[in-house]
Length: 403
Image (cartoon, rainbow, N blue to C red; front, side, top):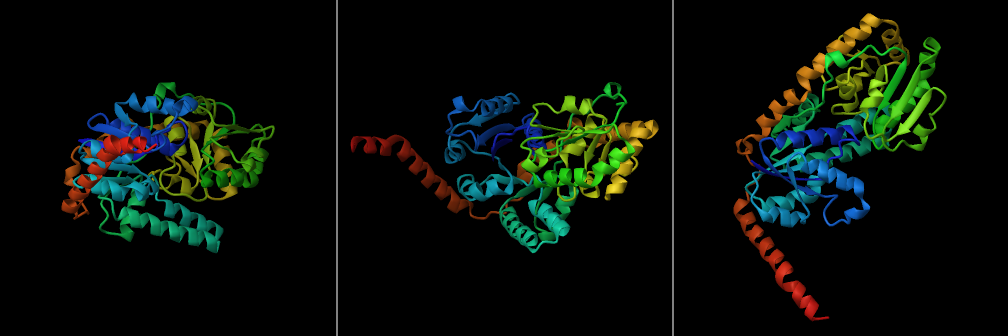
């Protein structure tokens, strides 16, 4: 299969979504030829952007060819079996043009998470009319572009069910987060009471989660476990988040590698009060051999079970009690870690998700196309090709001669 991806370069060190995207591409590249039209790379002076150049090299290292051509040029350069967009807003900009230039391809949109579900979750928490309005507008936007795709990629079964409830005609596949699982022998009982939260603070649920935890839960934890400490790790902490720093709370900001921070911690917390999709911070911690305390919202979509592979609590007192139980009960701690590792290995390891990715992309022609204007678009493709040829080989000479 020959696939063109239209998206920003994956940034696996910046967010859970970036880590998932990078690993999906890596698995796709094992059996497919992948060309990548990087929106944040085309026509840029990378001498002033060393980090973007690092992301380009990292993506090429997994067998992906990155184009510096325009999107139209990339779409006209060869015939593709599939066009893959990350996020609804990328598809909003480019899907219609891509359909005209690649009329026989199958079109995929990776929803990453269903944004309107997250916004409705927020509105249910705040009860603000403006938040409900924002959620309705987002829902309208997402569903409008999703109707134009042949296949939607959801990150959880819950997201898939929500989308199919809105439109039974949607063709939806589920590809979850992917994690590297620590070896059992490498996982040690972490003595102490060192808590960690990992998340990018561009993402509003993470800001809310930390403000909620420190304002409503942290005092209860410290009363029971005076030696408890917290590290807040993640890109772009807001002013509010930075202000949480104290003698017992460290705000690190961006770190290149989160694993050493996880390995130096005792418990991962994810006190999320709204959100959608799959929470990468939970899978990342469990895969590293840490027990996780989270909320019902945080655990959504993963198939986790309270008291078996995770602890779930939705009130400040219960959340603090779960943390205290893990610190004081070695047997509970070891059991949650062991079962959490096995759960991750069975469901979200490279090996487990590789099977799913191959099922989806081994033969994209099995998916019916929602588009019916292929003859017209073949003519449109010819028109684009002629215009591009003229711009490259004729018009620029005429402009130069007129100076």
